[in-house]
Amino acid sequence: MDNQSGGNTPIDADTRRSAWLFALYRVFVAAVLLLLGLFPDTPLGLHLVTPQFYAVIATAYLAFALVAAAFAWRCTHNPDTTSLTRIALIGGAGDGIGLIALLIVSGGVGTGIGLLLVPALVAAVLLSSARFALTLAAIATLTLLLAEGVSALFLHPADTAITQAGLLGATLFAAGLLARQFARRAGETRAQVERQEADLANLAELNAQIIARMSAGVIAVDPDGYIRSINEAARRLLPPRPGRHLSSLSPSVARVIRDWQRNGMPTTSQQLPGDRDQPALRIRLAPLGDRGDQGSLLILEDAAELQRQAQAGKLQALGRLTASIAHEIRNPLGAISHSAQLLGESPDLKPHDQRLLDIINNQSKRVNELISNVLSLSRRDAGGRERLNLQETLDRFAEEFCGALQLPRETLHARIEPADSEIQFDPSQLNQILWNLCSNARIHGGHDQPDSPPIVLRGGAGQVARVVSLDVIDAGPGISAEQEKDLFEPFVSGRAGGTGLGLYISRMLCENNGASLEYVHTPIGGCFRILFAPLETDSPKEQGA
Image (cartoon, rainbow, N blue to C red; front, side):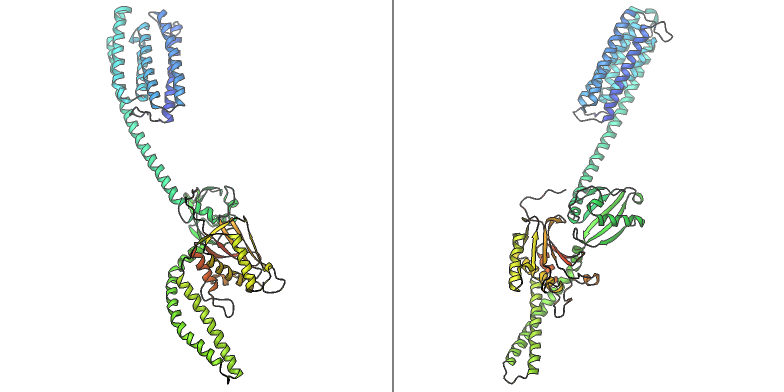
């Protein structure tokens, strides 16, 4: 129904369609009345008092109906309340004038033409503002009584039907009142529906904004596997591939969905190992609708990040404790090292005692290295992050690494695509991370042997999870599932004499710079992957769903 405010508020399509249908009804009524007057001898024909006037008036009414229908059709494509109200009032006035004129020249109220004023009045009230209901009913009733009086005095005095005219006027008033009440209730209902729609739209927008800014990835897929909604966090965790089907974006995640659907779609969580295209993920799956008839909901979380969060409290307390212990150990260790040095200068030292002294010196150095690493962990300052070109940084590191260990430059191969990929990282901390990773690759990957393949540093912007990544790849046997479980745990080493802190410190330094370090399974060799934090910019990036 029309808005009662009478402003330029757009109205619904159903109301405009109703105006168009009533205009067609008016054309039909005008055509029928013209035909009934042109063929009075037919069973349904009208016995007219003044047939010469009737034909002219009926033709004029039909022409008016056609013009009004044209304007009503135009209004269906122009959602403007004012134009519809104007058309409704003009149409009601034309109906009143035309029908009452036909009633006068055809013989009065007894012909039944006056009853056609009832639907015309109701339509005018419903399609225009409801406050005009009584005014329109009063005008129609007075005009009807006046017309009946004129007909009785001048045209056909013998067929006076003032009583019928009065009853018809009362009917018009009743129809106008009912139409006004209906229009008011319809307007109130429509206003309530519009408020609810606005609230739902605002709530949907709020939910969309919340989901878009969630740190966890959220994906909604339909029963056929097509993506209905995906937020920016999910796009960062999954490979940057085109397509609207989940299998084209991430075949491994699509496989998890299919297996889950075959098992009855219970609400559950699953772990998905990382590969060269995406990090290790924890996926929570839930059906949408009744038993998943509307699809599935996936919540993706970085498994490495979850593991770091789970260990954060424990490692923080452990760091404080080990830092205190390290300080206490360093003093007696210094005394032991100094005493061993003095003892080594003794001229009476026997070869057997010299071997024991070497053991003391070597183990003291190892303990001192361990203490230095623990103290560096306890400090864990963020350092000074700088904007670095990753290719240039790796080239400088390769020169330093190969030069210090007296290795051929070909031992380390660095390839970044695109070559202008940039990161924000503390240079000294990045150098320490790369040194730890490449040293492990050299020892465990067999790169310290002649004619061994090079250690590969490969990565770039947008290749994994839509951030800058770096893979350190060796040609060794890789890491078993049993070893991977404790790979980044402190004081766990797979090498005799190792402190077990190299990988742990590397991961902590990555976290200090907003990056992450994880192990990735590859068909050949081992691979450690660094996912760098997005570059900080002055203006916030626009986010996508």
